[in-house]
Image (tube, rainbow, N blue to C red; front, side):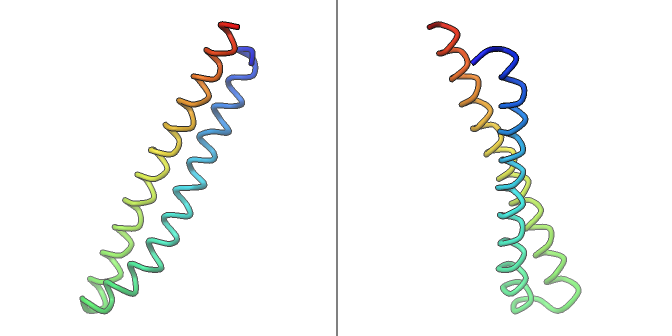
Length: 82
């Protein structure tokens, strides 16, 4: 893998991380809205569910993006050594 190939691979890694974060956000919202609406009345339950889903989605996107980007950089350094 050359340096010219690294930038698109890093963009793809972060785009995949954003996709994972989006899935986690959607699932967190679906599950959280049911749980929080059962526990708290109308204005509080959905707000807490949305805040929790946003937090989970952001954390999942950043963690996934970092892991995939790290893997791309490791593969680049290994191929550069060969």
